[in-house]
Image (cartoon, rainbow, N blue to C red; front, side, top):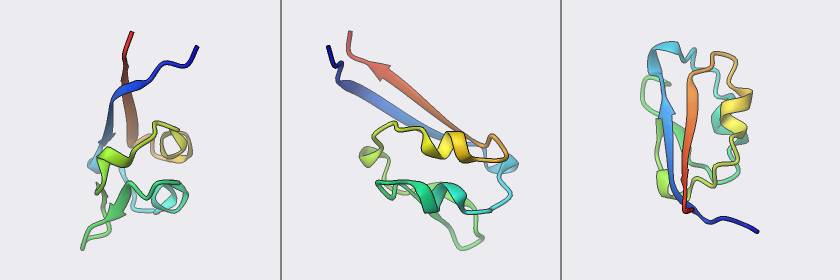
Length: 71
């Protein structure tokens, strides 16, 4: 049985980020962007599908995806 995702929260710890852009490049829904200083920002949180690719690929462990599922 597939459970629908009720809420997905993308958390970026900016102080840990070294601005490599890996998360931005691999996000299939283009949820992440860089700001004018090159820091990662969550531009389109409503489009996140909680695939956690960004979380897994971040070499600095600066991204965390929190998912609340409808039980």
